[in-house]
Image 1 (cartoon, rainbow, N blue to C red):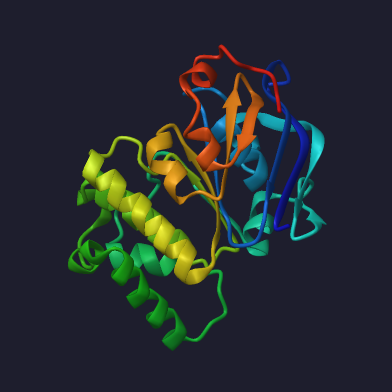
Image 2 (tube, rainbow, N blue to C red):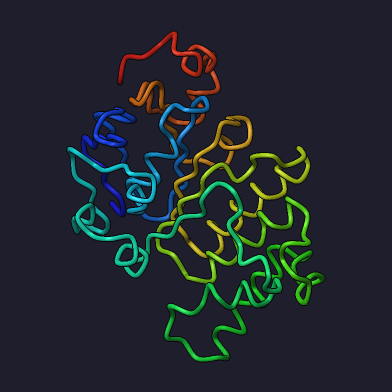
Amino acid sequence: MILDVKDIEVYYNNVILAIEDINISIEQGQIVSLLGANGAGKSTCLKAISGLLEVEKGRVTRGEIYFEGKRVDQLGAIERVKSGICLVAEGRQLLKTLTVEENLKVGSLIRKDSASVIKDDLERMYTYFPILKQRAKQVSETLSGGEQQMLVIARTIMMRPKLLLLDEPSLGLAPLIAAAVISEIHRINQELGTTILLVEQNAALALPISNKAYIITNGRVALCSTPEEMKKIDLRDYYLGRKRAAI
């Protein structure tokens, strides 16, 4: 088990209960999806795991998070990144005045590998997202939304994460671009063995590449099942909160 989230509860400003009794488990090499409506608590789960809750005045008030068998919920965000937990947050947060290539190289700064190994990884990112090679010398703020999403994912992969947390990678993208991004996420998982926790509203994109999926409804796990089983049910009942009981 690479990630084991046990009964976590999160409050914002010590007043607003965002998630409660959340349990998530991920095996090494899996893609696991967190599905649910906007505001259900999916992004809060990722922030709790990555240690970035404090940025928004949130905190884990109960529960435990284990990564590779070690408890990490008491560690800061930087320590979690160094351990191998890396988050691609919603909003395409790039160093916008730097070029595409410079952004990618920033992702390798925490590593101690040789320049030749870094260069090889850089070229690998260009095989996943060929458009980035064409834009290598272009300032990142001039990229399209889809290109920026590809870049922020590639930059995070340059960190060589053991656990990649992806928050709504298809958000705001045209359907064809969204499908292409999800396809490359699957390819990265298959070729690099990177374990991925994927937050998505679009179940049609997420389920085909997932080994397991959770539905979050009103801050709680309403369903945990295989993608095959989820395809047999009407997910709208969970997205709209008509079914809430944890399973």
